[in-house]
Amino acid sequence: NKSLLALGQVVSKLCEAGRASVQQGTSHVPYRASKITRLLQESLGGESLSTIVCTVTPAASQAEETASTLRFGSKASRVLTRPRVQVTAVEAPAVLQLREELAGAREEASIAQASAAEARAEAARTQEEAGETLSVALAEVAEARAELDA
Image (tube, rainbow, N blue to C red; front, side, top):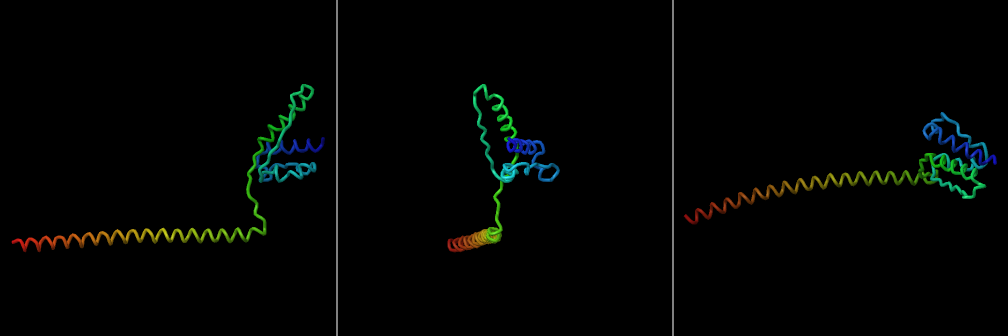
């Protein structure tokens, strides 16, 4: 079957070349060799999660087909993909708006953290001053008692 042969060639090429060289254009992957490889280009090309189910039989009469299927499955499992969420042109403005809102929220959070740190420092200074004032007042009370007792 020409389509299955082309699919095997595409998978082999992806395994041999590796994702990096395919993306850089140093290796040609023959996706246009058949309709099935053309349809599966996005899935095989590495921007989606893909699952290949290889069906085999324990029958001795089909040993050659089973071995071939297992070799194909082994090659297909070595193809590296990098799945990512695709954003359509319609969604792009909404995504940009959400990113701007997120940046604004992060900035507000950072300002709030800075304000909280300043407030904590001011509270510590106030507490220290109150402690000093209390110490002076206690010393004056002690002096006044000493004068009264004498």
